[in-house]
Amino acid sequence: MKDKKYLIDSNIIIYHLNGELLATDFLCQNLSHCCISQLTYIEVLSFPFTEEQECDVKQLLDKFTLIDINKQISLQAVENRKVKRIKIADNIIASTAQIYELILVSRNVDDFKSILVNVLNIFEK
Image 1 (tube, rainbow, N blue to C red):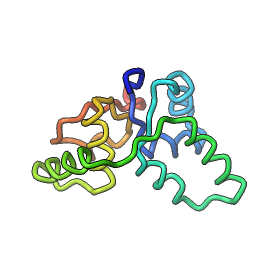
Image 2 (tube, rainbow, N blue to C red; image 1 turned 60 degrees about the vertical axis):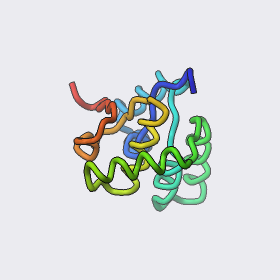
Image 3 (cartoon, helix red, strand yellow; image 1 turned 135 degrees about the vertical axis):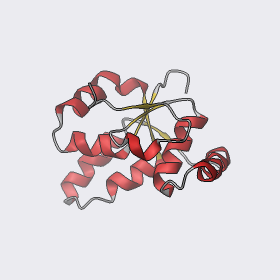
Image 4 (cartoon, rainbow, N blue to C red; image 1 turned 120 degrees about the vertical axis):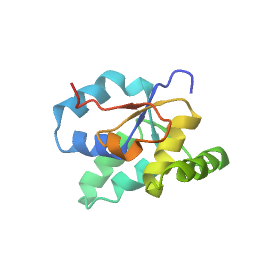
């Protein structure tokens, strides 16, 4: 994970798929330094895609280093819940960033307030 710097939240992938240039540019410029959580993989593929679109999305997601949920991440999520009642999906993604010391790239920065995670909103000037 030493060469990885960013954990990409599901919403950034969705913005990219919807043609948002800021998301696309960020991913293109930083792909070699980006990871996604197993949860992001699941969330993104849960959108209603055609069979062809789903194949394309899987190919995109496979370009990222995939981080599985493990005991450390689970325990961090428990600690985060003691601080803030955060949605479990967001909590696991934030916990992944915390455990691996990655910058969480997300537009939904409010979801992560009150917990100690480094969040980058690429849409904010």
